[in-house]
Length: 224
Image (cartoon, rainbow, N blue to C red; front, side):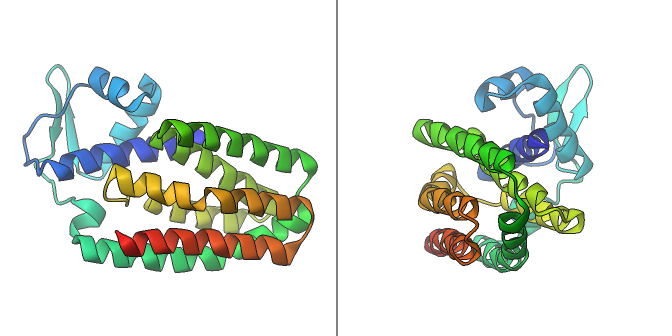
């Protein structure tokens, strides 16, 4: 499941690269080998991200020639939304995510095993290491894995599926690397507080920590 989120992040990084340079249909992108170096990912993860972009009509991969902006390119950040609209979209997504995820957190606090909590702690350590290196791909992968571990611990597969959609959208939506790092930096301490509360089986403290996490993210988005 971690690969799913990383490939979505790769797709988002390439989409932002295209958008920032205002590339037009037919413009050529760096080669797959160059993207692997730029993003620090393996060939299979990059391939999955490129397939996602090709399926969305953003790029076209021509064997023996390279990667090009698709003739069908209608994509810009958040499907042709302007920056102010993108910001509004993110804030609305946060509202929906908060409503869904709070329930998952309550259930995971009730039902989660120490093994599940230990897995979450491992992801937070990876998050912290990536944060120190300002490695956005590493941060987003660790963050996604941390939250996915919470969802799986809640024991509700429908809820898990719905919340994954929130992550898929959010991870390709930040406008700049600085904005994305700022979002994750502001919310990290609340991730730690959230896990501590869950381990103590303290539902109200867990919900409060998650609320603080969302509010920290919301403030950062509003200031973009």
